Length: 514
Length: 89
Image 1 (cartoon, each protein chain N blue to C red):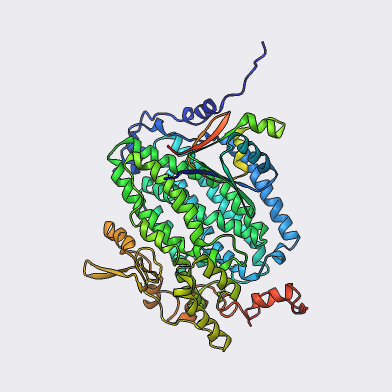
Image 2: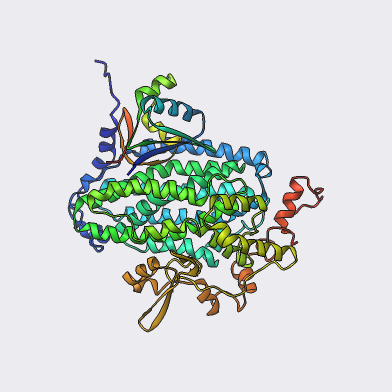
């Protein structure tokens, strides 16, 4: 007898290959096997309600991931063989990659570790399988990003020691501490932080318009790894939403816990994304959309639809969402101002926007750019042209929670810095905002342990007593080569050589101080 | 308040057929072209049908093949052998 339809349908296949592969323990107690499942106060009554909407099984996972990898590496090869770095719009763009490699790629690795750990902590088979796949995805992202950018490392400075720098450079403590905070939380908070708040609510802002921008700037390798990673991200985002719905449906006591985590991780993610805002508005020579426009589409519109959907569970939009929405017209300018001033201590170059870029910023930020930022930028530009490039030699006050210098301004008055402080156990702590101050108040014992780079430098824990020594010896930044002003840097000189604007030198070693 | 679902694809050869099929089944959807990507958004609901895709492509098509070309999505996902649906409640 011929079997007509021997192929299982998706739902059955998922059931057989995921849930039915699990078993109930008999000679050990469940709470001994999964000791971290209880302490956060989240109540799960029935793990079988967990839904994976993609119903992805391991065999299908390997099949599609293998196909993605083959496509991706064919493009990396083509990019390298054809000297793709020569076809980007401008070498200033490469500085966004330096920030990406040292600030974002290590987070992919941290996410891999995080999912590998929490995947072990859930007694539900569906959740374990989803975490396992995501752990493998995140490892892949970390690896493919390093492979893509290794080509740039052959031709430009500042990409030579990203992992070392991620653990040390002052501003890289912002992304690092974000993930360390999530990874040192319990398994359910980790999922709310990373799967929901970060992946679902906020990563579109990092990977979609910025990668589209990479394409628009001729960077074939980056757009390809970016979108290849995003194809996994679409799965992660779906998981993030399902996680939240699942936990909320399990027990009403979970609602206030989840709400507090959403408030916390929205705010932390919003602060972290200041770096991306600056990359989009200042570091892409060809611009796709402004940070404010991206925020409107990917947070206000998409996030608005999402939180309306979650209303039925008793979840409201994140606290201080209004502050974040108002800040969309300011954060990128304030962040770039800071990096411009402190470029002696960054692993990438900075510059003042060219006149046509200033015009674009005025158009995109009609309420704020000319009024609050243009004059400062024109002044710095003039100073630079007259031989007085401005570097700020005072180390900034950092926020105890997000670890960003206290550079952002009040929602209702962009001429006043937003600065909060409280006393805890006899010590005074400083914050950039009510959002970060609230996070501290909920878990002071966690955040008093923060490793704040400026404090550490002053305490003598970073290899030297002055910034120049810290930058060179502790951060592994080559002074005058990897850091400071772009114009006149070895990268700039090399770019002019590539473009034939100056004759190619016979000995064009990349690392030559200006 | 408007509640848009969306899906973004890499702007490549596969995506051309996906966009064609999506527009057939969701005539009210809006297609936005951005560098290297195509974003489709619709009010509340967007559906991709296997049958329409197979007609458009002229070959058998597994709904999960979409995983290779998708960049991002917004909305609750419902997927089985015959369709991929995004929706807000």
